[in-house]
Amino acid sequence: MGVTGVKTLMIAGGGTGGHIYPAIAVAREFLARDASRRVVFVGTERGLEKQIVPKAGFPLEFIQVGGLKGKGGLDLLRNLARLPLGFIQAFRLIGKHRPSVVMGVGGYSSGPVLLAAILRRVPTIIHDANAFPGVANRAVARFVTAAAVAFAEAAPRLKRADAVVTGNPIRAEFFSAQRPPRGAKQRLLIFGGSQGSRVINDAMAGALLFLARLKDTLDIVHQTGPNDLERIRESYRTSAFSDARVVPYLDPIVDELAAADLVVCRAGAMTLGELAAVGRGAVLIPFAAATNNHQELNARVVEAAGGAVVITEKELTPERLASAIESIAADGERARRMGEAAKTLAVPDATKRIVDLIEKIAAL
Image (cartoon, rainbow, N blue to C red; front, side, top):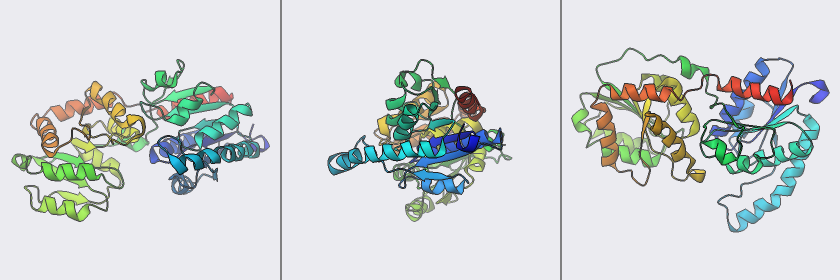
């Protein structure tokens, strides 16, 4: 029942925003249903959860654990040596907080905490945000009480026929976002995450020459991240799009997505969920170094639905990017059709579905 009879949800995992933000949405929904409940997060001191979780108002415990996939030499040996300590710390945290249910969202800390919960006979659930599940979720999938996935394609990769397709928790404002009054031009939005993407920045800078014929019909907003700002600004200054808005950050991104007709971006699970919620088509350039190539697999799901054109980093050239943008912009209705197709992938009640499943397995 948790500490002193209180119903407690423990959420383990993190590392990236793609793991943490959905988990926070679930935590808020869990508490909204019963004010007497508790939520505690477990992560590592090196992941983004160290900043994001306390800022969101939730307690955060740490265990010492590192990744194994893609590691070699001393890093692999060091992280293997940490596993027993991480597991012992996780086992103690289960005893300290006595959770009613433990949820793993992927990331280094997820595996040891879920394993400790399973051994202590605490109900467990995993949620995976990607079309190709992460290594931690794949490792424990057959042992947990329940599995939730954002993409139907993930279920067979977890070897869980009973995996529940819930979608990814996306903030409500993305579903209610309204397009502002449109100008005469189509709005093209380019972004590469909070730090920007050099690959996208360079390709777009080179594409400007090929897009020059669209200068009277295309309005561009480009988020570069802080490192490439001045260099990319100079590329726009000397192009046909000297009036483009080139900025290091976009906040709130929901307003920019709502104002866009077409988006050029990466294919992280949360980005795709936000595009679907707002209903915007995209040229997706998956991050080539993503684990298990999961960004491309995510992107292909959207492409198959008609909501995106996918260009891999290997295929990406300024000419290829310009051609994709021009072919969509030249057909006034194509961007709208792509947006409608993307919207068919949206799951407005994803957070509710996940918390319903948590309550079911924990008999709350």
